[in-house]
Image (cartoon, rainbow, N blue to C red):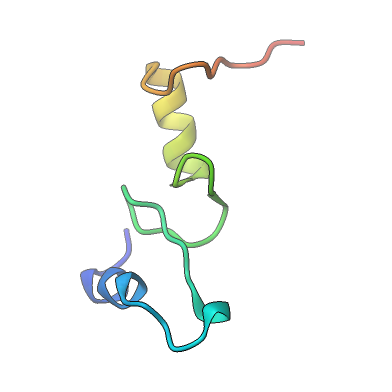
Length: 61
């Protein structure tokens, strides 16, 4: 979980567009972020396993 100050800093519009830090809206994690879902990999997996993401199912080989 990211600190609230870090989340607030990421929410502000940066001076330059390259400084944008995209964060997971559930936990605030910045690494392993999926833009399509606005979630990190950990939150994505939890939500997908609970069936909260429509159209996502676990792959099976």
